[in-house]
Amino acid sequence: MPHEQVVDALKSEVNRLKLEMKNLQVTHGAVGNITIGNYILTRLAQLGVTKIFGLPGDFNLGFLDLIEDHPDIDWVGNCNELNAAYAADGYARVKQNSLGVVLTTFGVGELSAMNGIAGAFSEMVPVLHLVGVPSTAQQKKRPILHHTLGDGRYDAYNIASRQFTISQALLMEKHEAAHQIDHAIVQCITRARPVYMTVPTDMVHQEISGERLKIPLTRHTAPNDLQTEEFVLDLIQERVREAEGDLVVIVDACVIRFDAQQEVKDFLKATGFPVYSTPMGKTAIDESYNRYGGVKISIPGSGPEFMSDIDLPWDHHASVGQAAC
Image (tube, rainbow, N blue to C red; front, top):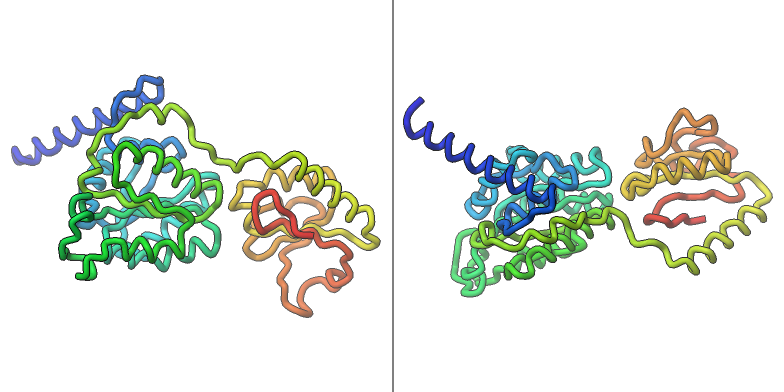
């Protein structure tokens, strides 16, 4: 092996061991300073993320080096950004109670991924879109730079992303970075929608305190207001008692998106109600359940004839903890 390759391999191994030591310090509560790039990766690893999809580009190469050195997260390169976004979408669906991650570069890269991000938004899939962007100094001075529109509007792509993401974390000040990162990731998981995060080239290796890493991120929405919950439960029980015909439960995809499969399973076990799934809700319930009736498709004249006579269809969808009756 040539001398240069040996040196590069040794440097890579040293970086990997340093990062592994940082992760051990986080695990055992001895957290010092950590780079912003590694803070992001540590948070993702804590949530069970093992793959990041995307394409290298001039504004994300520094962050990509950190991924390559990370002991628990693998880089999965794709042939284009649209495919990478779809791969992250699929990963998030399979992972459950976590998220998918796609990394692109500023401008051309993120625009290519936007179609996939919009699809994830429409189907309520938690995807973190990481974008390597020009340095904070360049963003403030707004020079004409490649991948910009040539008119100084460095925020044009961020503005476009707002239509398809529920939170945007634009990392510009290192003292705010940890809070911004945590907030965006929590929003992504608890609301099951894509979020957008920019990582400037000069912020990747900036060091911040790692103390927040000791506190696990929440993966669940806040508890219901007890008074409101009691009112809704009373209303549901009243509707059930008043129903003269059959009551059927219909399960949609959001049971999967919000990790509510166990709650629905417990509900069916307690009530013994018959249940159907929508096409996108398939796999949300155990199909060996003795009162599972199959997939319901909302087309006039389709499906079992008795469905038209149901007095109270109970549709588990819309948002977590919400049943539309």
